Image (cartoon, rainbow, N blue to C red; front, side):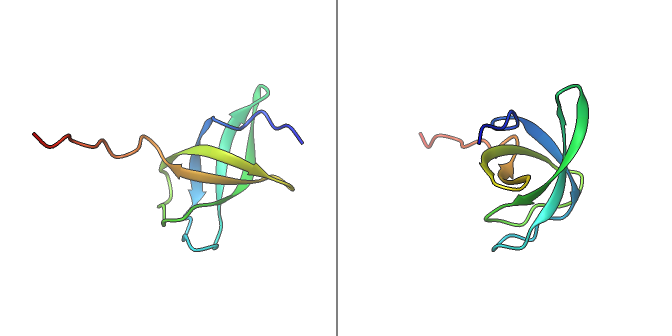
Length: 75
């Protein structure tokens, strides 16, 4: 199944607790906003911006915090 939300950013509506415990996100897609159940490896607080990195069946997605923490090169 193809879903247009892959690679999009969204806002968390409820915290994502990590370790297989989902939260809920709101994403602007197809001219409207839609909610999805979201999973992440690490906990993500409410009202954070996330990036959708994969799509599961049944309006479920995997996300990461966005923007990702910048890495500073060691000199």
